[in-house]
Image (cartoon, rainbow, N blue to C red; front, top):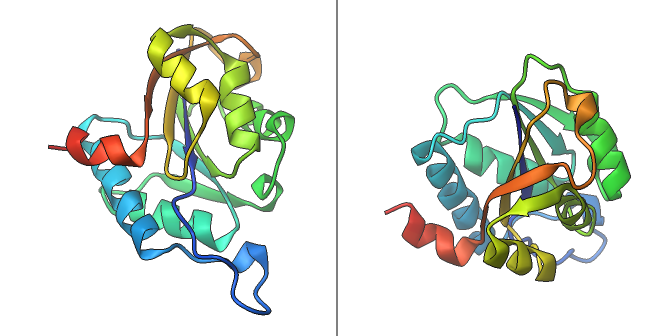
Length: 175
């Protein structure tokens, strides 16, 4: 079995004058959300073996907030190709992961993550699937399980949604 965890970056500040989109930082609310996501993941044993993270400042800060809940923090690979990547490129990055990593996490951006999540899921809680189909908000966490032996075998409609959580529900879920 393979488990894929998708996390959209947390709430970011708008770009300041002269600042690139890639350099945008998390807003205070985003920093808090990342810590809550990390606490939830640690409490529920959602510890990735490997993390693929976009190189954008807001995804790096999101991962730092999440990673603080793990000891030790999982291996992270910062991938420029994940910045603004379409669903197919994200899936290609996942398919290329070593099979020793049973759980892989991607910290990235919409619309690519949202499109990928909805493409991969064929089963799971209907209400959660419908909620995800509508929107993947900032700091939204998607956990998808696949009955395959290799990351290269992950394909559209091959996954079962284990859980979909959004920041406003995570605060209650960690208590």
